[in-house]
Amino acid sequence: MANHTKGRIKKLAGIAATIFVFIIIALAVYNKRPSETKYTRLLMGTVVEITLVGGDETGLTSAADAAFDEMQRLEHLLSRYRDDSDVARINRAAGKEAAVVSKETMDVIEASLKVSQYSHGAFDITMGVLGNLWHFTADDRGAMTPPPQQEAAKLLPLIDYHRIIIDKKNSTVKLARPGMKIDLGGIAKGYIVGRAVDVLKRHGIKKGIVHAGGDMVVFQEPDDEPWLIGIQDPRNKDRLIGTIKAYNTAISTSGDYERFFIKDGVRYHHIMDPSTGFPANKCRGVTIVAKDSTMADALSTAIFVLGPDDGMKLIEKLPDAQGLIIDANGRITVSAGLKGKVIFLKQ
Ligand code: ADP
Ligand code: MG
Image (cartoon, rainbow, N blue to C red; front, side):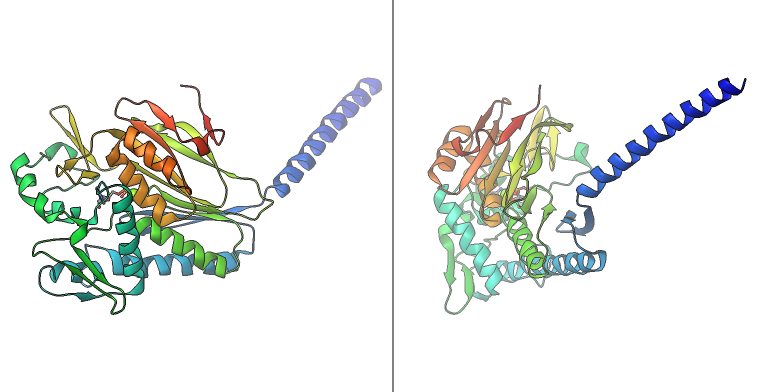
């Protein structure tokens, strides 16, 4: 009996020791992984998420707050939905006079003109006039119908980025024809996410991610591991097609699956072909990796419109852009510089 009890105690002691060792290992592993702190705020019609690594909580929170505040300030300048934004003032003065704008607005408009030139007008912020015709929301999808083709055709003469007249010396922007409208929806989020990262870095943050509805910037220190960023399957939101190894870079995705409706079997979404006034139909999704977040955002929209052939040609021409294109049939192509950085998951 005594021997039996002794045996049990030994056994229990053994189990306890094993558990103890496991806890030590688990704690060691846990301590090695620097903690990630996440902050979210509703901005720019989407959930903006800031992920920060390391640091003390008070410092991280004030850095994240400052970054969110900067994003909100910039949204107020660049949104077409706010009457007092620079964009709204430019649009109201169309065909009449030049509007004085902030440096930030000027920078975004200049960048957008650059991408218009690269893409021969596939990216064109004067597509804003189509906002009179098309409305996309995440809900109420069933109730929507596309506008008649001739209504869209009537607006096409107002879509022409050559008729945006900028005067940098006097900080003014003028739209040459009455009725013209600009919409920075395809570029502003990328710009704003980039400025948020500048704020975080000024607050001493060394590693993190700022993500706003498909536009993100990741940053880290030279000896850090790359971030692994998932690429969503455009036809199954619960599935990734793969991940991209990302290191101090911007990643932007444009897709036909966030804001859309389906009518009579046709999918209508928010990325417009400026030559037709109807949604571009050559792609399901485009992901661009580029150093500059403003460029990444605008290029993802531009290349979505251009389609896989002309789109990939443009990516390969630009020294600082890489990309992954999913065409209208689901076929995936990857630019030369991104090969080896994409890890595809089994289909
Ligand atoms: P998301 O806004 O979902 O991140 P995008 O970056 O592709 O996706 O931007 C889509 C937005 O860009 C549209 O909602 C519209 O405001 C604007 N846009 C749509 N088509 C074009 C285009 N051809 N050129 C410039 N901007 C566009
Ligand atoms: Mg874009």
